[in-house]
Amino acid sequence: MKYIREHLGAKLFLANLIVILVGIGILAITIQVTIPAAFNRHMGMMDQTSMMNGMGQGQGQGLGKTLFENFRASMFESLGYAVTASVIAALLVSFFISRRIVAPVRTLTNASQHIAEGHYAERVQVNGSDEIAQLAARFNKMTTQLEQVESMRRQLIGDVTHELRTPLTSIKGYMEGLIDGVLPSTTETFDQIHHEADRLSRLVDDLQELSRVEAKAYPLDFRSVAVPSLVQTTLKRLSPQATAKRIGLRSSLLADLPHILADEDRITQVLVNLVANAIQYTPEGGDVTISAIRHEDEIHISVKDTGIGIPPEHLANLFTRFYRVDKSRSRNAGGGSGIGLTIARHLVEAHGGRIWVESIGEGQGSTFSFSLKTSQ
Ligand code: ADP
Image (cartoon, rainbow, N blue to C red; front, side, top):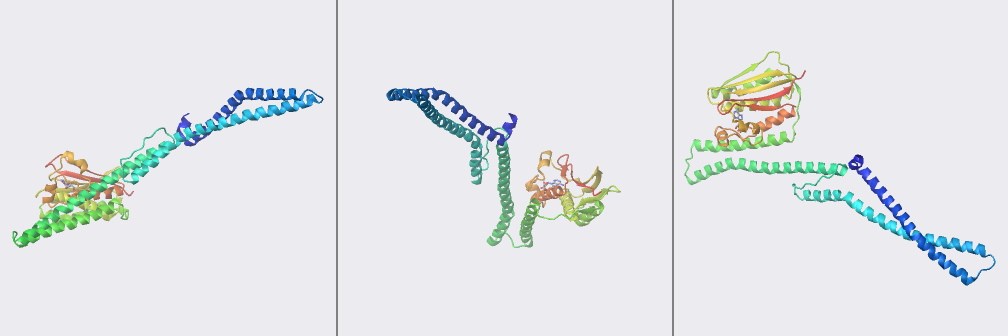
């Protein structure tokens, strides 16, 4: 029974069997019911004919022949009724059975039509566990994913519009101030405009990079990479920024760390991003430390700062695009649009690793870490 419930082929076989059995049953019953009456009638007709013809020579032979013909006639008559009844019964049974089997396919067809028209909330009811039920379950899963993609698309358009509007409004405001003579045409005003234009151009670059990493439209050149050289490149690149802010930027690496398997440029990009954030969100005089440890067949690289920290309720969302702990704070602090960590997460995950953040709370500093596989 379970086999039948789970396999459409078995269901169709059983349906055909039922139609055949019902046909045979009705055929047999109708013959049983109609044959005595048909036989009696034909025999009655035979008696009248023989009485009218009278009994003569060769009477036995003639009687046998008429008896056989009457029997055949009654048999055909009864069979005629029986075949008609069984064909009608078989048609009715197959009609109801095929309706039952085809109903979920029809539901799926209607649902897919709705989805094609953009109604992503459409779901079909899953009954049973045969192939059609499995198809319905997959269909629902696909619809859920389509709904998510659609909502992400809408959200992305909303976010991008919002992010673009802010610097554009500022630039427009400065320009109007200049035109109306409310703002002085000083270097400071032009610097502000330049700063906003710069932010706009960084945002566009970030968005382009984000769309590339989200679509995985970039090659990864996996090689065996030495962690100290990765850290040195990052330190060299960001030392000027750290020095300008009087932040102590240093590294603490264990000796004999195994090499990692990574695309050096991409992982440097991740580390630079984390260290740049650490410098940005750490007040003057603070410290930023890059460390690396071995953990089974992985290397964990961490960037620890003594900066402003992150309240616990924000920790889980930091790697979501456009997410910022405090929008005005990060903007005033020269921060970006909340895309950097999302790009970093995509890049680390493309390497088969994880990225995470720890912070005790505001003012307590933060530690961003990611894991990569060793190359040995
Ligand atoms: P942004 O370009 O805004 O810095 P990110 O994706 O790099 O975007 O970071 C997202 C948010 O995470 C930042 O806006 C900031 O609120 C928070 N953040 C990132 N790094 C740190 C850090 N080291 N200390 C405190 N907050 C941080």
